[in-house]
Image (cartoon, rainbow, N blue to C red; front, side, top):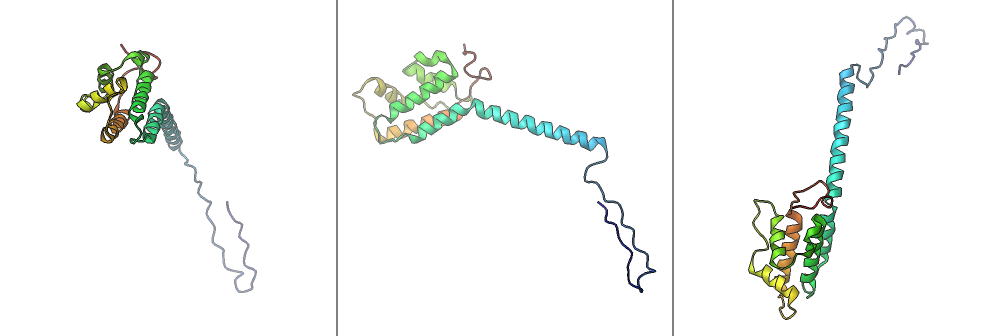
Length: 174
């Protein structure tokens, strides 16, 4: 955008030559290389956004499970059963064959989904009492035990790894 300058109109300034204003410089790059780089960066950003959206979409079950676990009140006597229901529904989501497991086998399956470097969470006496309390109504969990179970369930939902297909419900694990 160049501005046309008019010569001075006063008598004293009439013989002074006006400075020539240079052409404005374009903000767009002149070489094709910068355009190619710009397109490559846009494609890379779009791909990264797509991968992040897929990651969030494939892990939305984790957030739903964490929301339910966060709403559990340890003072409620049914909170331990509800925590098991949440973990069981996550296991069913990961593999439909896990719908029928219960007891110590369920605890072993939960620990099987943890990363190799993480220690086992559910192989202690409190977890075994928890599983027994689900079957036998005469076994009661203390407040501290219910808090521990909810914390373990939350930790498991955050840490577990699925080692299967891209979409967990597509192919069951063997």
